[in-house]
Amino acid sequence: MAPDAPARGLSAEARCALASALLCGLVLGFFWPGVAHYDSVAQYQQVVSGAFYDWHPPAMARLWSLFHALGWQGQGPMFLLQTALYWTGLGLLAAALAGRGARIAAIAVLALGLWPPALGWQVVVVKDGQMAAALLAATGLIGWHRLREKPLTIAATAVALLLFGYAVLVRSNAIFAVAPLAAGLLAPWRWRDWPRRFALIAAVTLAVLALSPAINRGLLGAAPSGAEGSQAIFDMAGIAHRAGPAAVPLLPPATWRRLEAEHCHSSILWDKFSIGKRCDYIQQGLAGRPRQEIFAAWTGAIRAHPGAWAAHRLAHWNATMRWFVPWHFPQAVPLARSEPNPFGLASPAPRVAAFDRFAGGLANSPLGAPILALAAALAVLALARPGQSIAHSLAVPLALSAAAMELSFLVVSIAPDWRYHLWSTLAAWLSAILLLTAPLPRRRARIALTALALVALTGLAARLWLPQIGDDYQALMG
Image (cartoon, rainbow, N blue to C red):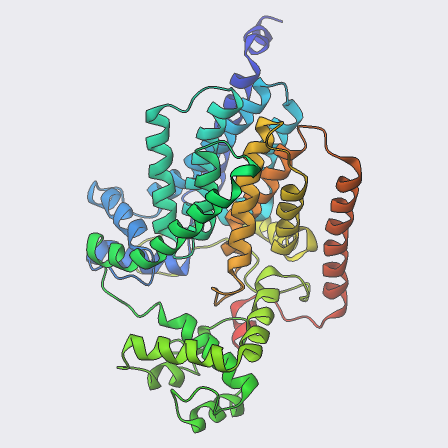
């Protein structure tokens, strides 16, 4: 009896904090030293060489270089950082919910951290994991104060702003998620404020998109890599495929006809056009062209052929949202081993492979589809009553963040990797957990559940009916 007495004396908040710390330790031990993705290896090369460029986020590489300068080599420090931030955010949110008596919701928050597709990709040391961890930590910190009905301190605000800023810099499209999240969390959300709040979100988003190249190249000292041209090339190829070789006069019609003859077109991912791949003649043909000329041709082709562009973007959005796709669709299974590299970036123990296969199966299923997370976020927005519930006032910005990020892929996206949806998935289901802590209007709740079931069932039907592609990258490259 005596050994159990201290545990019984712990508050609900302390038990959640302890559980979160234990889960963090277990994850670190099971997956150590984390998995180095292909992008991770490219960034670590910059860390070792000291030459930074902006294809991958220089903010992450610069932070990594600080650990490297202190003698801590490999991906271990970045894995430790993102895992600690991940579980700190979840732990703070769970503890605050438990303190309000919402113990089932608190358990659900911690269980969400163990959801295999999310956890499997969160242990990969890559920008998506860094972004999700930073935003979870900021959400947990603010939620800890809001749910306990305490004012947000200056120190907590400063830390949250630092985390939001890092998340913005660590992914080129992160602002679509960060702007609505920060605007809704830093000040309590009220629907009557939505015109001014949305105007602020739009203004901040546009400003960040405009200033990001200057920050990356000026402040962070990254050399330009031409990364911003990949979206234009991807879309122009899609337009030329649908509207004909004369639709994009930036390159000769013969080039676009070659694209068709060699089956280079893809509305799923742009990689076929990258240098060194079999269809790189598209990018080679644009070498040396001024960026303004490429972007003018891109926007001009969209204006001239909006239907072709929309068809291309919708096809891509369906692929990246994994709605009407085969059961085995590439880039969903988390990596169990690090990319081969000359820098000594090691892999976790072989036991991780079985976990990742299981996680990949769930990620490939309708339950793991980003479209289901988007549907959940939209349901939260339809059902939440932030003026009547503190938990709902936190659920709304999380749902807005998830929805804005997922809808942004309609316009800005060139690949279907599941990891791109890591934050959106976590944010959507966190918002749903917060939503369920207060009573809901029954009729609207039934409609929302029906819509969720319809999305899941149509996704299941597509997976059972469509021919399989395979799980690996080469299956997409053809």
